[in-house]
Image 1 (tube, rainbow, N blue to C red):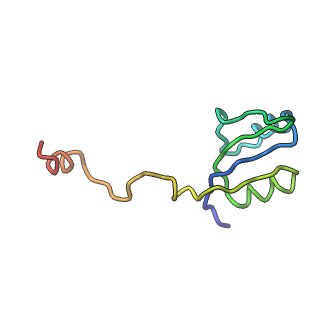
Image 2: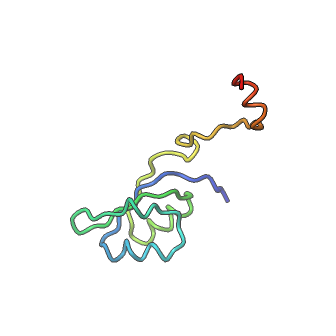
Length: 89
């Protein structure tokens, strides 16, 4: 099972259905939740399996980008002492 995650926008047919998403344990960004007409919209970070399940349940899901394409985290790490030495401190 592929666990790669994607930034998504989920559109629910109603605000009530959007509220019920909170009980599913998905990685949804609650501050992004809002109404668009009669629909509810929220952004999140989901696997393709989770996207498929939501679509089967009647949600519209727009896949925007892979998690890695938006993550600014460095792939290399260093100790604080080494970083300070490199910075001339």
